[in-house]
Image (cartoon, rainbow, N blue to C red; front, side, top):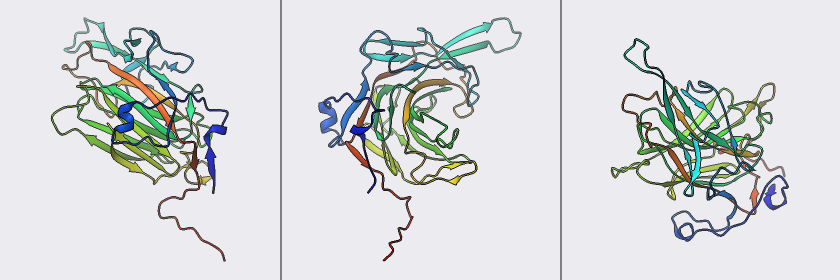
Length: 301
């Protein structure tokens, strides 16, 4: 049996902590898990020992409109929360057209090369903005894309995305393979409320051969079928690419090929992506002797 004992891995940073009472008694059991890392955002600035502030040009991915910048206007820590604020600025008030020309900035932070994890339960309590063109996200990417190749071969785990024009629905998505393949589940609130009204807990439980998504402790998607390919090597052994260190990303995109662009009703006044905390829990060890669903083991006598 192939087993990964996490306490013996020097690349990990561990800081054990007690579970909250709500977590101990909620729908999602934490028996057998330890909190190995968290950021409660209790200071007055981002902890840059754990987080990178990424900067990227407009259109860097997905035809998004925002520029990701390192600015206190866009990224703040206060009152125990991380606040990612989208900013719209009119760039030319006399364009001669019926539409104002505008530029957009936003924030994106990641733990790449600072806090990385192989397997675990990843949890974020957050409140999302409402409005056409917003796409807040809590997700995981491979720390070293050279292991299996560049995206999508390296793998991507989207723990949460919520489109600003459809804030009653949360998406959990897995990206992998070459050419690009994905699997996706959704969780929809049906009582008239939505994810922009209040804080909700988004959880992704990543185990060898199985990844499971939850909202407020309620399971809504599970995936065990994926693959990875690398140029010249064909399909690699399951559960690649989800058997390598990943890091955490929090960002707020504005516009793009999936969510669409802001419209006249999209508000940029006091409409941030607010994160209360990010926490990572792990078991002491994980059994990596797993097989792709439907794969048959042959026993030679």
